[in-house]
Length: 398
Image (spheres, rainbow, N blue to C red):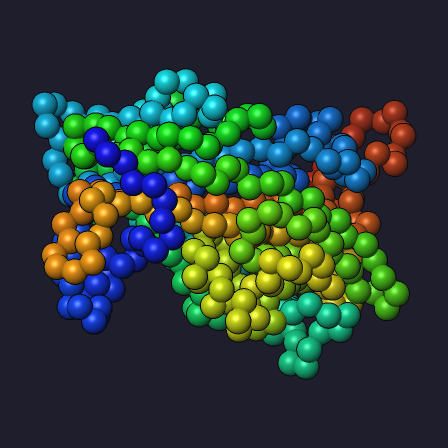
């Protein structure tokens, strides 16, 4: 079967927009769609070296980048000749064997609930929201969410962004037949020397055979550092990553009250009040470009951001940061879209890229589990408490 080389002009989104084309061209949905999420991870999220790697990170070292891969196949077709079966056959440079099996779940996963667990303990204190790069927080900050005033069992209102889209993808729920990798049968991630470049083929009994070639390899690793500056602000600096379309950073911290979390702090690099939603996910280059224009995402030329002094003052004990480099996107379709007339694609495929890193910020190492190594006592130690921001939001404390 012929394969279609990547062309940025062939975007899957055109399937939804085709009705508005000047030529009044019509298009039918493809029989099958394929998605590849190709990631590079460093920092705490990418540690693969156990305690040694963790200690190296704590004292300014670097851990090897990890590479991640997620595959999803969704089809409008029912399987033929028995149970659903499909495989991804990658180029040998990926070093994951001859094929990656795309397993079909027996039942769809339950929809995530927007309510808190039944045994919900109301979090203590408040959540303080800051945003924007600069030595000082802009007027009107922080926005304070008092957990004592939040209805039991509900997420705090206004916590997450509604302006930044969560770009939909393939799921068991929106496909007649579905398969994904990694899964319980196979799930070893690519090693640091692997390459995603080259020919890829997808074949199975519920999809047309797909063939395409990737010309963009895994993105380079992000290496971020933080440093305190006069006046109490924190500088966040990182290396420029080739192929990055934009950057987004966030930090979470808190102030302990005895053994429980008191005030919690959440900062976003956006110059608008935008937290979460698609900013924690994969975003297309077109969406990133729009978000750069309204200063929600930092441009690819930017390699530093100053976290306001008020953030550190509100979270003096510990703060963890995260940085994302959004990446390019490759789109494929067969047959290619004609200049005019009806388009009946057999299949479409999309490969998305990003690179992320996480780091401890400031000097409050004791707040992340007491791993600073300063205590030389021979006395038995009680297992240290590890407060977490998400745990506190769910009412879980030490």
